Image 1 (cartoon, rainbow over the protein chains, first blue to last red):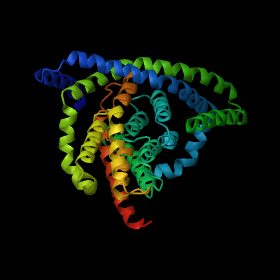
Image 2: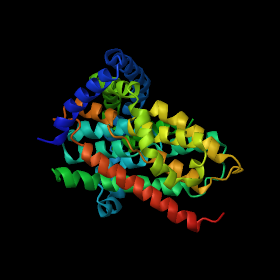
Image 3: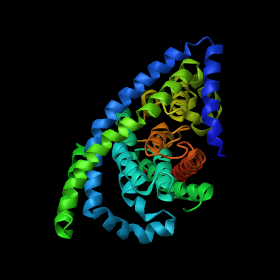
Image 4: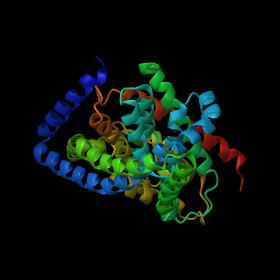
Amino acid sequence: MDFSAYLIPLLLAFVAIFGVSRQVDVYSALSQGAEEGLRILLRILPALVGLLTAVHMLRASGATEVLETALAPILTRLGIPPETAALLVIRPVSGSGALAIGSELMAAHGPDSYIGRVAAVMLGSTETTFYTIAVYFGSAGIRRTRYAIPAALAADLAGFMAAAFAVRLFFGVS
Amino acid sequence: MAMAWIWTGMVVVSVVYGLYAGTIGAVGSAAMEGAASAVELCLSMAGVICLWNGVMAIMKACGLTEGLSRLFRPILSRLLPRACRDKETLSALSGNVSANLLGLGNAATPLGITAARRMAQGCEGRASDELCLLVVLNTASIQLLPTTVAGVRSALGAESAFDILPAVWLASVISVAVGLLTARLLSRLWRS
């Protein structure tokens, strides 16, 4: 029994009881949030149609394997499975692109496989770095970004390595 | 425009490589399959995404976001002492961090931008050390419940969609720590 089996139902109950005790209309908040969730889905669906089409094309052509083989010597040394090569490349640049590649990896290898879990943890523990930097510095009028990009990319690389390490630690390689 | 180049690049690379490797037939059918799988994926993760968005909305309505942001004020004042001398910057910063933690991206970004704008005053277009730290904090994801990923996992039939949580937390903490340490280190080397 893993602890998330307890966490999810207990969290649901806690949030509901906490809300009611504070006289929050939890049910209408829940449905409003769910409606917002639908809006999020409507926003990512068109992007995913385009990107998953391209990702499936790349995979079928065999081009992703070329990238995996090319990066394999470095990635294996860092403890990162080479199958995730395309995900590493796209992750800092495009959030929906990374979601497309990651979900394709999870579907191809299985969500409970080593590769599938590493892809999921990578998606969950990193951000669309270049987009975020552009939004923040762009709106603050910063042109000289100094060491922000190398530091953020170091965080990404550490996140990728840590994702593979954490999955091996908690689930083993299977 | 960036996405136009990325998408075009992906399609062109797969067609060119497909012609070279003789896999072009498979590329065509994969394109159709990919488009269909996008809709399937969205439909099958819709329930999970909507449910967790609803739960997040309850947390927000209960004031849990404010509670969390109060919790982060002391840490932020230590991390970004100059910015936190300003009350409004501090409240925007702590709101940004707590919204990020709860995965409320729509709420986190405007707060972060407000903080960045205030911190950039008098910088003349040059990122200060604290602004670099703020950006690193935001580029390293620190989400407690990665609901989209869990949605994808449950849509694909994972046994327990959230069982990756401890791994995600560990990886996030390592990534944020490495980012902040690298920024600290580089701030000494980067004099310009």
